[in-house]
Length: 194
Image 1: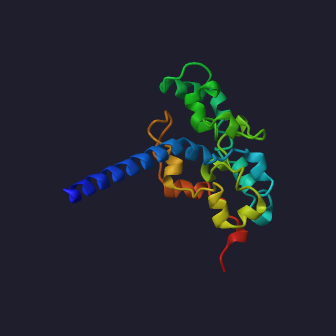
Image 2 (image 1 turned 90 degrees about the vertical axis):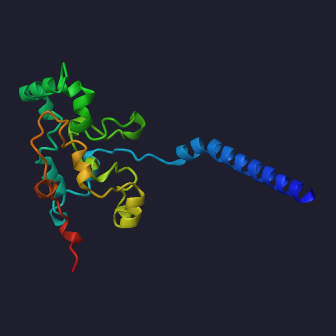
Image 3 (image 1 turned 45 degrees about the vertical axis):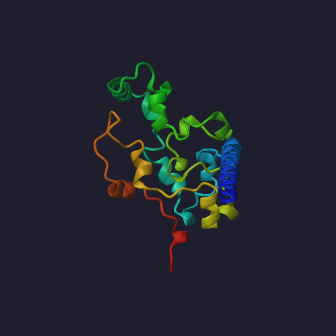
């Protein structure tokens, strides 16, 4: 009989301990989520500060000459109005959340995640592919790949591109990542491996 009570007591203690631990973890979950800092968008001008020199491949100019840099401006064209209507957008495409979600980097992010230097007029910027840059843009962080990744620098993948370049776009004509990646390549000659 004594063994039975010991077993029952052990089960009760175990259940109470597991229950309390689960409750405590659940109570801490919102605090844990709040502790994860969202990275902020800084805009193309901040990227240009370090990525405009010929020695580094003049990536800022390559971007400025690209269709990505003109993604917001193109929404003001008559062709954009027609495409927007195909997608069920009425009114000005430059004011449509549906259009701006892909034509403006960081558009859908909360206001708190947009630095004063962020501008919708920049269109699709470096941060669309490389992630919001506020925490990795400092030179010491950028020179340390692990630190940059920890600070929000993202690897560019096919999924990065196909978030917008897909059948949901009214102007979609197919997308082959390997081909398109070559069109927007902007290597830094200083990063060449010996």
